[in-house]
Structures are given as C-alpha cells and as structure tokens.
Image 1 (cartoon, each protein chain N blue to C red):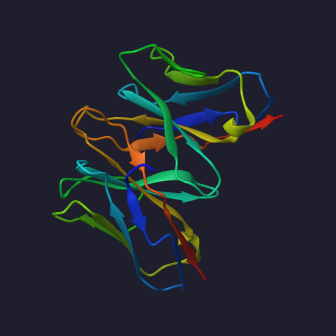
Image 2: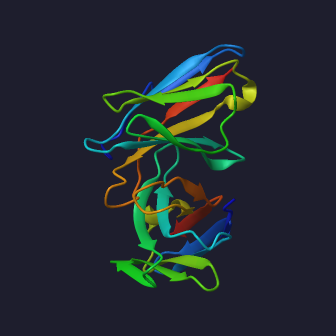
Length: 113
Length: 115
C-alpha cells in the first residue's frame, strides 16, 4: 500500500458524459501527478499540482481539467467523454522537498461505452 | 521535450537467469531515473531509482546503471524468480530537484520468468 488513495476503483459511463476522479496523496506530500495508461500509449503524464497550484502540464486534453484543494486532495475532471478516453487513470504523489520519488495510487479504471 | 526509449518490449528468461532492460533518454537535463514494476491491473510500484550524480545503485537482486554521456540507463535483475514476472517501466524526470518532477515513461518491458 503506497498511502495514495483513489476513488472510485471502477467507473463505467457513456460517451458525452462527464466524470470526476478523486485522489488523496500520502500524508505530508504536497505534489500530485495524474497519469493516463491505455493499452497502446503506456503511461502518459497529464498534469501536476504542487500545494494547490498547477506546476506542469503534459499531454492533457482541453476536455480534461484538474485541481488540488486546500486539504491537498486532487480531482481530475473528464468531460465530453469519448471511447478513446477509456483507460486506467493513476494519481501519484511526492514531497518535492527532499526527493522526486513518486508513489502511485491504485488507479481508477474508466470505461466509456 | 524529453523522450524515453525502452528495449526490449518483451523478455523471456529461465528462472535463475539474469534479465537486463535498457532505456535511452533524449534530454541531457534529465536528472532522476526511476524504475517501476507493474503487475496486471495494479499500480506501478517503485523498485529502484538513481540520480544523475550516481553511476550505479544496487538493492539485493536489482541494480541500475547510468551512463550520462551516452544518455542511457539499465535495469539488471539477477537470479530471476517467477514472481519477477511483470511489466517494467523506466522513466526520466527533468526539472530542478524539489521543483518539478513529472515523469516521462518508456513504453514498458513485459518480463516473463519461466520456472
């Protein structure tokens, strides 16, 4: 158990819908990262937050957005869902004070029908 | 931006043999190189990492080497066991230490250890 929690574990929805994925970092970690893992694309970095502020952006679609709240949990919002958005979405956290080591949560499996 | 190439994509070894997975990166500014092990449907788990100021690091049966000049790093697993079977990902991180740490991942190597 990494100490990073993600909910829900599974999510099944239809095209065009909107969903919210939630992540709670390890105690003491200020930085949260979101990654998308699909079969043909491997692990793709989406976005990073540090202490409530966006720090880095990767291959995140405009239909996707994220935020980090004062209690440091983060949410990833996916809207106008398409079949191709079906994937595992992982959240990771790190301290960014002494090390860049990232610890991954168990992931949310999103299925868009 | 940074690009990480990983080889081979699949690797099959006999139990007890060694396994080597290699990665190359494109950005010479990369300074942190972790390796993750991922079992089917589970989260990536950090197994070892190395920073750019170190050439080699070992942890029991696992070792990682880094060649900054050639911009490549490798994972070595000795005395492989069936429970080592998984997908292994290498990654590289750019950015000042303590400032930004998003990882760029290789596409993974599926390791199968046959008893």
